[in-house]
Image (tube, rainbow, N blue to C red; front, side, top):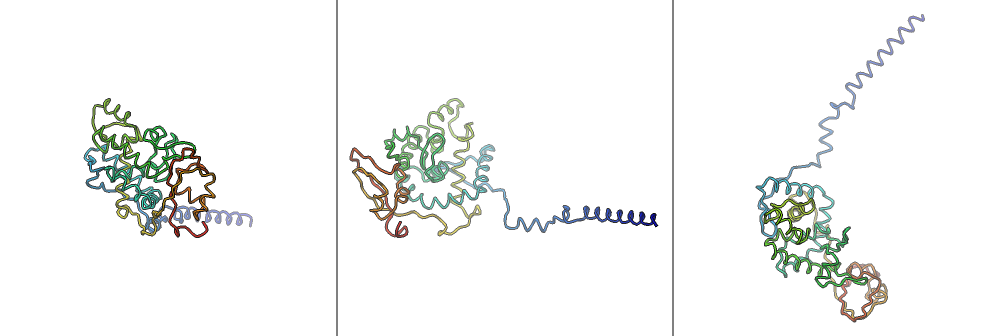
Length: 314
């Protein structure tokens, strides 16, 4: 009886082991059963594609020499990186609808190619950014450069945050670079690396254009990033971005209030204009304090939104 019991237990153990082995070999966790159907279900609505290189890529009317294998690869990199960083690209498209109407007419006034609005896009993401080097605003202007171009920069006021005035400074700087280097592409590169730095590399390497230069990582990618974002933002549907006009941020119309006296309290000042402190500062980020000294009696133009744009009571 005892022997029979042992035999039955042994048979049962063998059966359990057999079933376990079968489960491991054919169970739902095998590669076979992670089926193509499941994979297709996951990837049906999201696919990653290589991007065909667009024809006639240019910056400021100056063609990109895609036939150069190095140039091709660098351009392809920026198209891929910026296309598939979807959240960033979509935010840029939304902001561009708000701020390009401010930037475009100033570029046109100075005779600077419209493509340079995309330089502001890569410099700051169309935000009032401050870099680790303390470059400021949409156009990332250093304090010394701002003062050289007659921007007011002090504890009360920093006009590098003034979109229109900083755009004018950028235009003047770019025009000087274009005159010095002879091309808009080189002027764009010099905006990043500085005129002196670019000139030094041109002389050292004995070449005369951006695409022949061996540059550091940032400046080496700089113009390609501008061109990639230009291509994507001008053709968003082509690169898979779907939105309606209502999804974009809107340019807010303003009126001007002139002030030639000190302002002791901008919160109280804003309330008299039927807005609040936050809205006053949003539209005038160049006002850096909660007050304005203005001992010289200088005339300042403060922008406030037209009535009805913000909810009543703000």
